Structures are given as C-alpha cells and as structure tokens.
Length: 286
Image 1 (tube, rainbow, N blue to C red):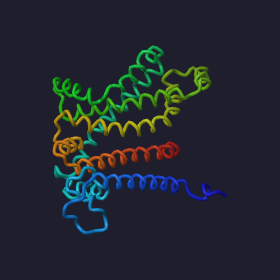
Image 2: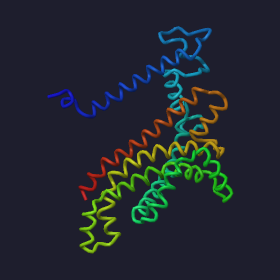
Image 3: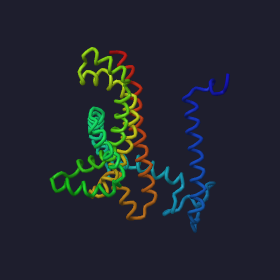
Image 4: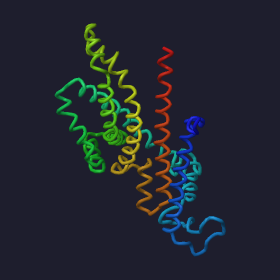
C-alpha cells in the first residue's frame, strides 16, 4: 500500500496548502528584508530590523499580520476604522451583484442553449464583454445610473454583476448541454414539453457545472464590488479603504485591507462549497 493510499485526502490537501504557504511567506520575507532599509533606532529582537519600519516599502508578513489583526479586532465592529465594518459594506454590494449575476447568467445560458440564433449572435458578445476593463466601464455605469436617480448600493451591485455573470453564463451553457441527445430524444418520445425536459433533464445535468461557476462568480463579485467603490466616492467599504491608503501612502493599511478582502472571498466561496456538499444529501432525503 502506497503513502498516497494511507494518508487521508483532506490531510494531503492541507499539507499541500501549508507547503505552498510556507514557500510564499519565505519569498515574501526575503523580499521585505531586501526592500526595506533598516531603521535608525532598531528595536531589539530576533526578527530582522527591516521588518518593522513605520512606513515600509514592502511590509513584512508579521507587520501585515499585526495590521490585519488590529484592523479586525482593534476597534468596535461599528467603527469606521474597523475592517470588519468595511468588509460588511463590500460584502453587501458583492452579494447583491452575485445574486444579479446568477439570475442574468442562468437566463442568458438558458436562452443561448435553446436558440441557435442567440448561440451564434449573443454568445460572442458575452465573451467580448469580458475584454473591456471594468475600470473603464465602472465610471460609465455610475454616471448612467446616477442620472437615472440610482445611487448607493445599486451602481456597485451592477458593476459587481458585470464581472460575475460571465462564469455563470459559460458554466451553465456547458451544463445545460451536458444532457445526452439520446436522453432528450427519449423524453421527446414520451411527448415531454420543452419545460419538462428542462426541469427533468437539463437542469439536473447542469448542477455539477453550476457550483464551480458560482464559486468563481462569487470571487469576481467581491472584486467588482471593491472596484465599484472607487468611482462612486464611497466613504465605506474595502475599496474606500484601499483608496485612502493609496492617497496617504499607508502601505500597512493597504495590505491589511487586501488580506481582509481575500479572507472575505475565501469565506464566501467556502459557504458555497458547504452548500454544494450538502445539496446531494438534502435531495436524497426528499
């Protein structure tokens, strides 16, 4: 019996993640040591003095960890200095954009799969839409919706959805076409309608493709929400904190905000993974 068969799969996966993380941290630590000049009055300690500059060029891993901890737990959650508060604001826009992207993506995929005209005429434009930088479209969306009287959450949600709908559309197109032609023909012989074929065959066949697409869409929705906070003049949100940090040269705040954004995306995708794993058990119990 090989080592691969004796070690549980989850342990192998955790070990792989740990090894990659250690390599990244090692490279990062060396880069921070080389990039930052040593302070004139270094504090005694076993860590390199270059790691504790007040305004580092490249913050060290311990500096970022301390800044992230202080941003998350150093202030009340309702405080505008709390990164939990700003993550909640961004997550609200991201979830709204994610919901909008899911609806649009499934609707577009359903239309494309059932119409040869839309397959040839609409799908290429869906693909082309992703070649346009979101930083270029975001201000236009803000201006158009602002002139229509929509401000606040909606523009950020639309910007978020403009990024997130693409993987849902492509994933569902592949999923809805996963049903075999023989199965479809069999249902036709039973005089099944198009809606019945969709509900009984195409939709169940698309579920394995839907959740991977939703995970990618969730990560993109959070990215879109952060980008959407930049041209809207938002006073709260992770994008607003990044803008403040950039204007004032606050590298530690910028890195801490990026870490919190990554954690927010990771937790959101983790929730979708749990739902994906629980769904077969729920369907089996029905």
